[in-house]
Every structure is written in structure tokens, then in C-alpha cells.
Length: 132
Length: 132
Image (cartoon, rainbow over all chains, first blue to last red; front, top):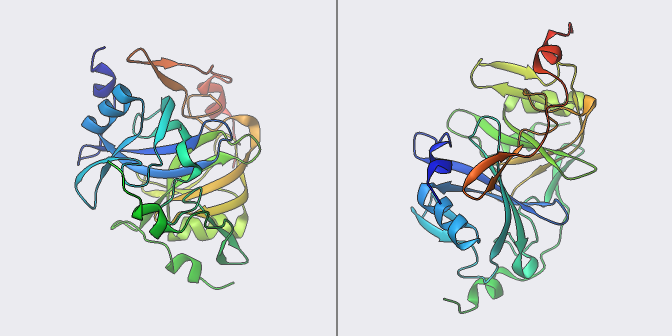
């Protein structure tokens, strides 16, 4: 496989592209994170989501601490070649570090952000788990 | 209605936030664009998507040329308060300037971006239409 698909992406000045992870069955948007060239290549090679953590400035193999790996079903690129969508199987059913299914758990109602989704697993339990 | 929901958003240094428009019925991701404070307030007030065009540096009332307005069904904010999802009804059924339903019409297959969705309306026809 060539790397030409990487060259066709319009990376930001920092060499990144946002990736939207979506449940491949329900269409629910689970989270948005960033990828660099290396993390996207790893994602494709391993068929699991590998992001670039801007805060930690390192590769972030989704689920490396929580076990909540995202298996890749499809990767899509938009018309401007500057946003990716990932169709994923969310292992463990939880994408958000708050212990919720999705990071988008707040909804604008009557001018306020209202929480609309429950915490499924306490984050302390989620990240207290030992994993590789 | 107060503006406190705007103050709770973590805007970029440029005062922007990315917004992902998703079909409220099918879950299909239609497009990603940017909003500033004013465009989000207008989106909420008018219940139609109003973006900020970074290239044209002006408010972009989605559908102002094509007629393909996005009616708002819900607006969600993520855990980091730096990405929005919009649940929309896509009038005309076409979100992409290429005349396709969604901007995410390319899928990575065997190391290449393959086009997986047809042009529904020729863009020249889409933007040749007179509208307010």
C-alpha cells in the first residue's frame, strides 16, 4: 500500500487533521480528536483508532488505558480533504473520559447546556483499570 | 434567554468552534464548518445553521445561495466544550458544494480515497439558482 492517501490530505500548519469517530451501527457521534500523519498510518495499519494528543504531544492509542478501543470499519474524507470521519465499533461502549458513551452529552435547551446522557462507568474505575 | 451558553464554550484563539452537521434522522454526517459567537447566536435565534466562513471572513447563512438550508433540531456540546454537533434537517437533501448529499463522499479502500457517493445535482445548477 502506498502513502499517497496521506499526501492527499490537507493537514493543518501543525500537521494535523480532526477525526470524528462515529458509531458504525447507530451513527452516533462519539468523539472528535486529532490525527497526524503517523497516527493515521497506524490507524490504517492496525484498524484501530490512534490519535495525536495535542495536550500530551504524543500518540494516543485510544483505549490504551481504559480498554475502550475503537475498531475501524471505514475512514472517510471530506470534500476539502481537511476532516476525517471514522466509522468505529466502540469496544466497551464508552468513548468519553467522563465515563459516558459519547462526548456530546450536553444539549442546548432553553439557553442552557443540559446534560442528557448518564455516566455509565465512574471515570476512576475506567482509568484505574490496569492495561498495557 | 441569556448568553451564558456562549460563555461556556472554549472558543479557539480566533474565536471559533467547529460544528458538525448531522442528519437528525439518519445520523449521517453531512459537513463540518466553523461558527463564531455571532453565528451560533444567530443559529439559535433563527433555528437554521449560520456558519462563519474562514475563507470569505463573513457570516455564511447555509443555503443562502443554494436554498439548501439546515433547520436545527438540536445542538450538542462535547466534554471539552470545543466542538458542536448540530442535528439538522437538510432541506433539498444536499449539504456539499459538490452537489452531493454529504461532504464525506470518499472512503479509504485499498490505500486510496474512493468516491462512494454520487453527485445528485450539478453544482453549476445548484449555485446558478437565484436566491436571497
